[in-house]
Image 1 (cartoon, helix red, strand yellow):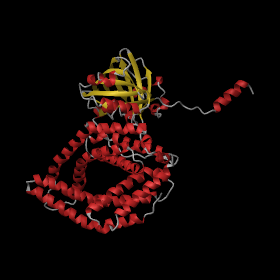
Image 2: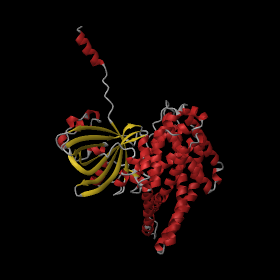
Image 3: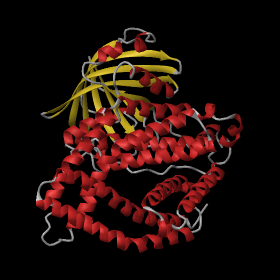
Image 4: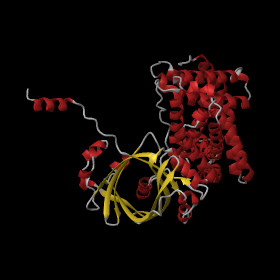
Length: 526
């Protein structure tokens, strides 16, 4: 055989590995109008910046198909003009890290995208199904960008101060933000610098890209609430790796629901769930490792979660409790006045949510959470004798955690039939911890049959206890309305709700006892 042919044959047989997709690591902070110069000229920036930076006028056009296929796939396509230069960029959201996105760039000759200049075959194959002439402009951003490179202890960061607008047809929205892009070093540097900048101005963590904000403006849509995703824990993980995955998973859900929560409804609920999941993780981690950083995060998560309570309580009352009673068509009872009287209270709750999402203390907490995760702060804070535990298999740790929480639940539920409402409420909270912990560690036990049965019985018990808690909460809400109530129709509606729920309490007692018994008899799967 010819040597050249032999060489060609061997090359053909070798698997070609595609290079990893280029990654952008960036933290965005929303600033108030007129505050960018104050931040840019602050000692935090000036003492470590390499020079005065550069100023550019950027006009960026975002493209998509008429039916928004790229938006649906989590991809953006843009062409940016900076002076006489034109650059097209494709970005793809990351599902693993709120700081990272895949990014591909190439120069172009005109404002029209040129897909031949980009490795589109690497990007989910979606571009293979779309002809370039199908792309149309969706919206435009016009920005004055002052860019400065800053050297910090943990890396090098490019800081961009963006002031401008997003335009979609006749619609316009102001844009004022600080982008921190990691050029060298560790991602922890972004959170550390972000916290430093918050000493200068009350910045907010910006969880939406310019692309996401542009689509929201162009399509007239609100951000959608996001449910928890799998923790992706694996049997090969150590405890240390498991901690990082758990906290990151909670962080992603929190950040994904900040914008939806500003619109109320399901966004508030999922943000509250995300904070409870984080607190559950911190609860069992702190039982094992007494670390200052985890303790501080728990206190801030608890404070933030409490601010969401009023809005969520009114949502449940209006959209669930009241809606269910209205379906019964009780004679001579008009619930419209009660619904109308409830709305101002709910709106007040929504206002509290928005205020707290924008609050400096909340945003410091969000940045601190990211910093703890990126630095893996628990490693340096645990006692020396606990370092060995961090290196142990996660499965051993998970079994210990689940056993401990279940044991506490069973102890709290002794003499279940005779528990007073306060004790039943405490049991419900412990069962919530058990539910979240079970879902966290479920990927470690996918090969074990009883997992589904255990979760089903736990969920059914939680549901009936939740109904009892909703009744107690409703009474508090109704008393608030009653203080302002003057209409006889409103008083009759309040009385009807109280009577209806009193009946539910009596009929649900046996159901609760039955479900508690079934849960107690369900075997552990770990």
